[in-house]
Length: 131
Image 1 (tube, rainbow, N blue to C red):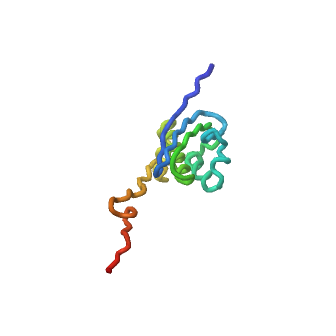
Image 2: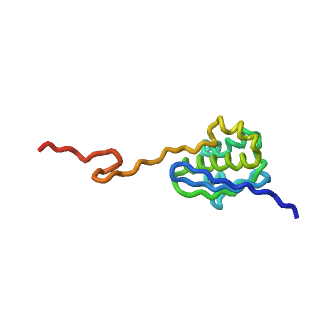
Image 3: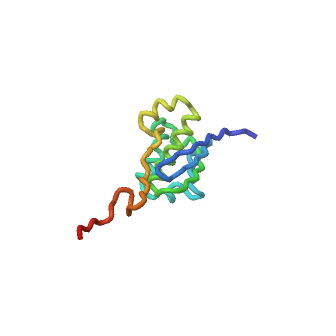
């Protein structure tokens, strides 16, 4: 029985967290037990996920098992892209030279600002009344 290597990685964006297990295969992508095209309905989101593979010319070389939770669909797509980029970096360190300048390995630090006490939101104030 041949042992195939599995590369796993975690990607994040806002509150979305994606875990990816990447094995050599035919390019089948499963996200939360659903097909890739079903889970990400728009072409833009699908292209965002496939961008690391297109950058290093490894399209349809790996099967992906993805578990993602939290956030909205666009944030989940970017979190998956981040995880795929990290897994490709584990597969071959030379891919870092191509992926890093595109920004796929950088974790986007922007988060929602917390609500402050005594205010209705993070920065909003209650309406001022002079009288």
